[in-house]
Length: 194
Length: 246
Image (cartoon, rainbow over all chains, first blue to last red):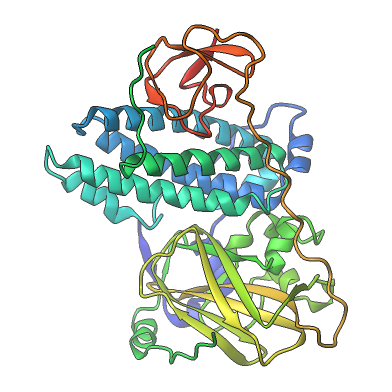
């Protein structure tokens, strides 16, 4: 990421808008015909903001699981990480589809950020963890990350308008909360005879 | 609790010495509760707000501004007091919640009514969570008030601005408009099958499933595609990555 250093006098709002906050960085494929109007009617702006934030959050989840997946030693943890990875990869495709349906009015003005979700250090910690010592780092990094998603999803459920987005937020809150419990060594599953 | 913390000299020095703006902007957030003007626009409770509807988190400008729109022309509607912004009825103690969509090091959060700073909360230079709450004592204020909330970023010259219209206490002023829409009832997933259970039984949270295991859920049968422990939110119809319907 490049940082532009500008004199104070140049910090006008217009400049911020054009250089600091340029909209429309991500090309958005056209929505399927006929779906835009109903989707826009169903989603409010906060739904769009929530989905956009969740896309970035999920991209980060996949970075974390990608870094940890092949290095963890505990079999149960490896299973959990793999399940998180496949479910969130599916969710990411769904969320991007919903944002496409929302149309250019919703996504064109949005902002795209692939960084600065407050936990860049945690990726570095994960990378730096020596072989054989990855498990506790991954448990902590992923638990903190998923807890943030649960918090975000909980707060969205009272302000969103789209039933399917609210339902998604409910499932995010439930699943991430349960994942945090599993990651923290909470009540764990016992293999039961079939 | 009313806090009057002197703005740290160190932070002031940082602002003066490193006037920097990042491209793209590094942080985004707005006051979601009680709903700020941009939140009301985004929820559709105040119509015809323009582009702010889709980016209530983007009211960003240089630190030190005291308006609702950060001086951004296409967000000017936020600074228009004649738009009939509904005010949220509150008591003398109010908890403000920020929803942050991009997280970055925080200098502090400030709250103003008129020219008076009524509260400040130190951010410690750390990134906040996706949601941040502050409890502010507005005991000295009553009636309809326009509160300005400011999130001062720690390592850029910028801040984020949210105006919140409040009806404080039982004092005079215009009648308050009802506060935010209550959440819809949460649908409860049904775990009870209507058919006799298939081999493997009913889907059960806390159970570890292996590839090939079959369960019933909501009267349908599913086969496990990926080993996992079942948790709430991962009901078979909701996670095609884990279960395929048989």
